[in-house]
Structures are given as C-alpha cells and as structure tokens.
Length: 545
Image 1 (cartoon, rainbow, N blue to C red):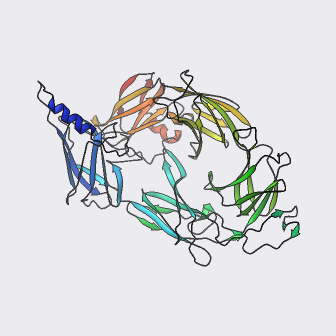
Image 2: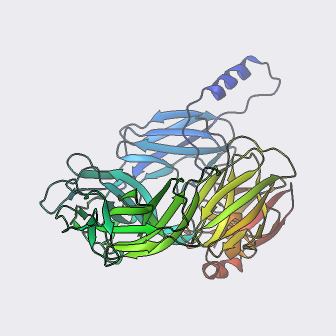
Image 3: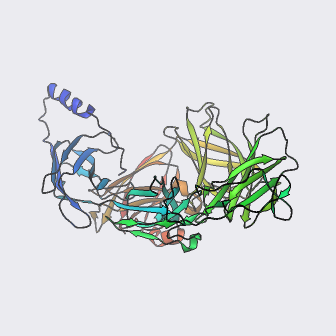
C-alpha cells in the first residue's frame, strides 16, 4: 500500500452522518476495530502522546485519529469493513506508515473473521547529522552549501544520491534531521569571505596572470575553497562515511582550507560579439553527481574569463544567447583544472540537444502543465523540461541511458519511444553524446491492473515486497511496479503497460538491488508469470520467497 499525503477532511464523517438519517430495511453491519500499541522500534518502549491516524486505502483523507495514552495503546472503533492505511508520529519520530519501507507500508484489512487488533506499531526514532564548518583560523564559515548524500540500495539500485542540502548559519552550523538509517556523506561548497579577485585579470599564453597587459604577482587573497568532504578531505574517495542507526545523532565538523584560485580564459573565434554569453562550471561530486561552483565569469576582450576557481574536474558549459533564438545554445566539455589556462571553446558539446514530441493516443492537444523527465537509472540523475500544449519539448542531456516519464497526464504513461540520432531499446533511449536528436514519446491510456495475494505455505503473508518484473528488465526500468502486501496478504499493482511480466513476493527484500538481472534471476524461477492486456484486470497468487 502506498503512503498518502496527510490531509485532514471531514467529508467521510459527514457522509456517514447523512447515511444514518436514511431508513434501511437491512440491519446495519457492526463497526470494526483497529487497535494495538505504538512502541519505539529501537528499545521496544511504549510511546505515549503519539498521534495515530487511519484512512481508507487509495484515499488521502483521514477517517479517524487519536493520541495514545501512557501505555502507548490505541484503538480506532466503528470502522466499516475495508482496507485502511495507518500512520503515526510523535516528537522525535517523523510520520511513518505501519511497517513502512521506502514509502510503502502494510495496509490493515478489517471485516468479519479478520484480526485487526493487537498490532505492534514499531516507530523508528529520528536520526540526524549536524556539525560546524570552520576555516584555517578556526572561524565559522557562514553561508556555505552543505550537501547530504546517502549510499546504498535505493529504488532497487546501489547508488550514491543527494538526499538534502542546507546552508550554514552565522555560527557555521548546519543540521539534517528526520533521517532514516543508512550510510551518509557530507560535501561542502563555499567561498572564503575574504577572497579578493583582481579586476580584469587575464590568462596569457605562458600561463601567468596579468592585468591590463602588465605582469602581476598573485594576491594572497586570490583564493578559493575546493569541494570538501567530511572529514576535511578534498578527495571524494577519502570521504568518511557516517553510518546512522535509528535514533543516532551524529556530529560531522568540517574544516575548510583555502587554496590559490585559478583563472580560465575561454576563447571562441566564432562567437558573435553582439550575443551575450556566460560560462558555468559544475564540479563532480561522487562520480556523476555535480554541483555548481561558486566562481565568477565575465566577458573580457571578446572572450569569457572565469575567476575564483579551485583545482578540480569540472563540466564546463558555455551558453550563448543569440537574438534569433528563444533558447540559449549550449556547448559543454570536461575540463581538468590544475593551473591557469586558456581553453578554446568546444566545437561540439558533450551534451546532446534533444528536440521532441509527446503524443497522447493521437490527441492534438495535451493538458496544461505537462512535464517530461529523463532519468539515468544507473546514477539516479536526470533532467526535465516543460511540454507545450502541442507536445513539443527541448532539453540538453549528457551521454548515457535514460528512462522517460511524463507527468500531469491523468491515467497515461509512456507506451513507446522512437528516435532519430539515438538508439531505443525497450523503454530506454541510449544517447552517445554531442549533436542533436529527435525523440518522439507516445503516451497510452490502455493500461492493465493487477490484484493479488502473497502466500507462504498456503497462508497470507503480510509485509512482503511485491515486484512486477517486465521482460528484459535491464532495458525497461520504467515498467517495474512495486507494492507491499497488506495484513491479509493482498496487494495491488496499477497502471501496467500491456506485455509479459513476472510477479514476485520477497520477504525482507527491501535491501535487494532488485533492478539487477543477476539479483532477480533466482527469484524469477518461483514467480508468477502473467500476460497483461490493455484495460484488463487480473487476480494472481504469488509464492512469498
């Protein structure tokens, strides 16, 4: 069951009151109860003053709520038969669903001959990471950007991905709260408050810095901070991981050391002097992850000069704003900066310009606010673009394999892709880099739905991870579907593109890299095969493994 956003509503209560005023010839079915105890998942201690809420499955509205007493007990009475979500929260404990994993949790089914009492709601205490940034003199570093990364299995893949960003206060302090257990890293991007970049600096062919054509000794205040990781290292491979368990409150202080700033001069012989341009440097953080670098770019004598750059590897993007174009033209290339240097603007960008069209079952006009996103499933990184009412979009992407998703088109998903200038495999498009391509994205509403039950030795198995695996899973990541089996072992998989699939029920499978074909292979042998047709509904039984 998916966890829904917390919304307060009295609509269902009003409907129930109205129903009581209508006469009925049949005796009313007695209401049912959901009851149990909220405990600290780490210590097992009963949690008083915990807010517990319940709502109907697939609906966001709260049907009933209460606050636990000193014994941590709760009971919600008078519920009609059905399937319900259950959430709880308390000071020091972020809102969580019952047996929650990655936003999925076990729904509670109530009705005749079903046991929905004596539940044990294990609430995980919040974890946090906080610290202070200081400079060489031990003074706090203000207004620094602190990035939080988490490494581990996320959405079925082993990746390191950004999980938050914070800014230091006047005391150089930062904090990340409401963290779940796992392994984290801290990375810092900042500028020395005292840095002074000489005006109109130039990089000559001999690599020396000059101003107005005269040799100039480098100022001791012409400095920059490289990207720095906990604990106070500038190589991401030497970054110290912070391992959090439930309730941990880790401290991660980072010291920053300024280094002489470097200066780049980007010359572009083909540039139109009347067209504005700018340069951006994106620093690599943990491989494919990148973050903007706090450097300054200016136009000097028909070239672009970038000042205040720390040594490192960057993706340099040169954007030109021509008067006859609605969008800037962008060229990019990888640069390894270790000294002052003059660079020729790239003839061809490492980025690919994607011009595309979104089609919806032959309709000529799309709903408003349609958004397209391309995601690299290996790195978790992606880019997006707004789609016009006529279905047109344009964006720039780095080389790699991408899965596509289109948002804000009700009851529709990507059905097929076609491309000129790139390779389409399954629901993926492989982009080699540079140049441009035409990409057509066809949406379909002809989808199937699966309902089922997970069984262990013939009995319903609650809390199992349910995975719908498409054929050729490596090239059809967007076609995976997941759920968590409810208290009676049932589950639902919605909006399934027609095709052949295997349904798996895996106990304790939330840490599995389930997108990996190698990891999936032993489970597929005992899965349930189903062929999904457009607009069809299916009931399946799956053996819990």
